[in-house]
Image (tube, rainbow, N blue to C red):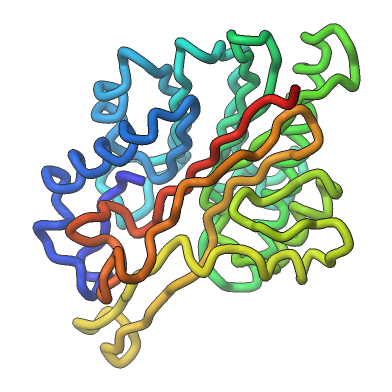
Length: 300
């Protein structure tokens, strides 16, 4: 979430609000204020800043993209911070997606970090994945995201089985969490594929609806109004010099319920009146995406 924005492509983003000297303290203030056991980040290219801020409390896991996009001057990728006083990192895997899901297919530029964690307070295990899927609204990108979802689900299930074996009882409860920028809207094919492939136990933390008795399309209506909001174009960067608005939900925290972990609360998302009428990023919000947060606890 700390990759620099393209000022020319964000219509109302002031250069001073884009500078890292402005965005770094805001970013760290928001993250440190969460006091979270696990923090998942995307588009991270200021790894040294994140590492320095959390070196005394969290272990940093980082998976850069294979290539650097033209909009970024530094390599960027996914990162995960794990609080050492609470959690033990048992296994870490980096999954670089293939373009079709087949092993011999070319690799895409997107990846995921998957971890098997042990809660030191009770000795129980759970799995966390952090990812950033392919962007773009073209049909071929939608198909690629769907393939990436299926690869991610398979990798999560494999890691969960190994967690069950650590418990000494195959089939024991090892809940899974999936967090990240999926670049897919509620009800779109990758969203549908994720829920359908996983089965009925996977829930979106910010969706208040119960999945039981609902189709996935009906369930998707319960997602937040937006997790990203930006105005792009102007200055000749859009067709005809016009400005386009993107206000959509494409970031999620998914968790398995009924697998030993209970959802207790979520972090309140900012409202339009909190952000202002010019969208994100802004003077108070350093990213074009909002922060999602989940508080959960082990079932008794």
